[in-house]
Image 1 (cartoon, rainbow, N blue to C red):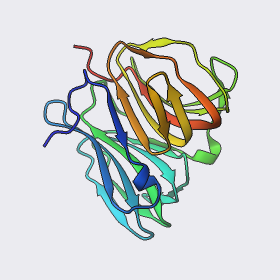
Image 2 (image 1 turned 90 degrees about the horizontal axis):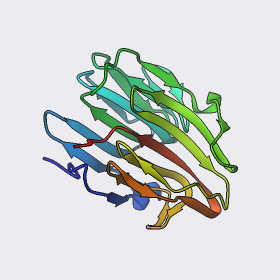
Image 3 (image 1 turned 90 degrees about the vertical axis):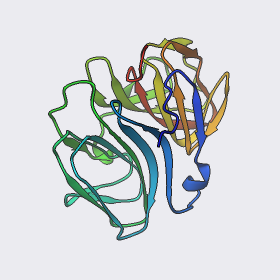
Image 4 (image 1 turned 180 degrees about the vertical axis):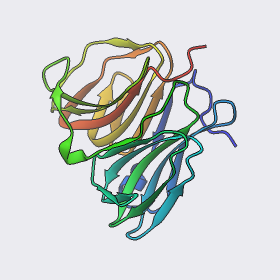
Length: 214
C-alpha cells in the first residue's frame, strides 16, 4: 500500500476530527521499499500500549497527553528519536495523541534520545514573534518546533529538500490557505511560500530538507 508517496506533490491532510477527540489512526504518508516509510497520527486511550520492533528509524512527538516510553514519562511537546535497532514499548498513561514517523534513514543514524516537552530550549527565531526549539539536526535535514505569536509574518522563502508541517495549536496560514490544529502539510522540493499567523497564533512541528529532490 502507498499513500501520498509522490514527494513532488503538495499534500494537505485535514485530521482536525482526530484532534477533536475521535479515536483511531490517521495515515499521512506510506511509501514502499526502498523508501519504506510510514507517517501517522494516532490517538491512544488511557492504558493503551504499542510496540516498535526497531527495524527502522522512529520519530515520536507527543501532541497531547502523557506517554511512557520504556518507562520514561513524556508529556506534551516531548520528542523521541529511536535509531534503527532500538526497540521500544509505548504506554499511554492518559488519553494521548502522537505523531509517528517510521522510515529507513537516508543518513547515518546511531543516536537515540528523548527530549521532554517541559525542558525544551526555546530560542528567538529569524523574525520577531517566532520562538524555535530544535529537535534534530542532520546533514541536510532539520526538525523543530516553532511557536508563532499572533500576527507574525515570515519572509518569502524556498525549501530545498521540501518541508513537512503539522499544526499543533492555533491556525497556521500562508498565501495558499489557512490550516487549523490537526492539519498536515507536505510541500515539495523548491516549493515556496510566505507563512503568517492571525490573532490565534500557532505552534507547529516542521521538518525541512528531507524530501526527494529528483
